[in-house]
Length: 383
Ligand SMILES: *Cc1c(COP(=O)(O)O)cnc(C)c1O
Image (cartoon, rainbow, N blue to C red; front, top):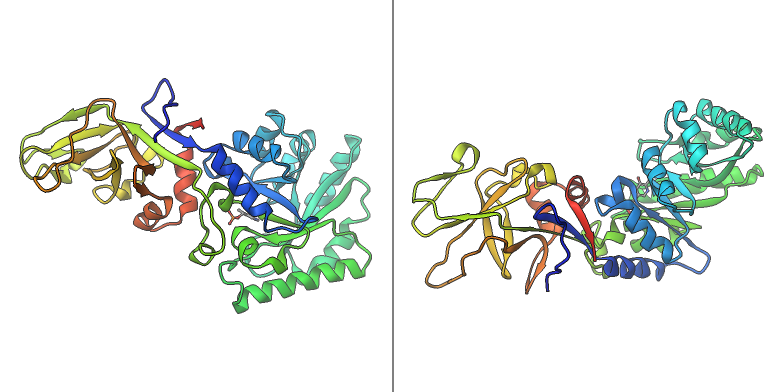
């Protein structure tokens, strides 16, 4: 049943099920060989799930590395005492280098200017700056073009202040590992890695798989996989569903802060996009809105769970609040809500469930974005 742990100051919150997170980590570890490492992607506050708390759980399970998107995300983990290697998945500006070195955050590297500046700064600090070489193989986002990887490395490898700890690329179409685009990226990556090795350069940890590639194609696990969304119990695409069983980690709940029975014809919310259609409609207010990740595009289109039943959200979703309508009918006599009753925006209640996927579909986006959005302002409680 629903957990009783709640924040003291607000009747809307995100629940994080650490048991589910552990089981998902285990499910991914089971896909890997004994020598293959796991890098847990905890960027964007662990996809909204809380990076520090999630990283602690993952760390306790012996994962090998964490990946973040920004310097401050890496610094947050360090300040919380996370000691595992941290990889930043892009190259920050040169002005960020002192912070990288102070917190031992490995940047991805793909410009010579950055690499040499990183080396200089590391020498001055009396250390060696580890980095991962990002190789561009087709996504056209970041990295050194695969045909230029060797030349690039020759241009920086002399520097005693830096050390290549890994080489990686990123797939654009990992949901379709039988497709030509994916296979081409694989071939280009293999080619670049082989060129580096043939020239006697050390590649360190070679890695390319995100969640879908990790699940769908064991042949590209190489030395390490970078798993993100799957750890949080979200399927990255339909193809992975039959291949791995994952448990959603995040639920979103709120308690009713007001109930009322406006007269038939009364409007609800900004612009009166909903009008009470008949008598005996109960309007309940929930204290979360679009600033909490409940996108305004869902207005009048989404449902929430109340006592294991679906009830409709009505009126435009406000920044910090939204309303739902309960109408009992003779054939469906759902009881009315009371002040303080809990409703479920994402998650299970009884036999019903509203998934991130359902909400993503309604919003015209992916579950990744829905989870990130709910993490932005709502307080998290860890079960
Ligand atoms: C976000 C990201 C990942 C993780 O992707 P998921 O699909 O969430 O597993 C892996 N590698 C890079 C470079 C990324 O940016």
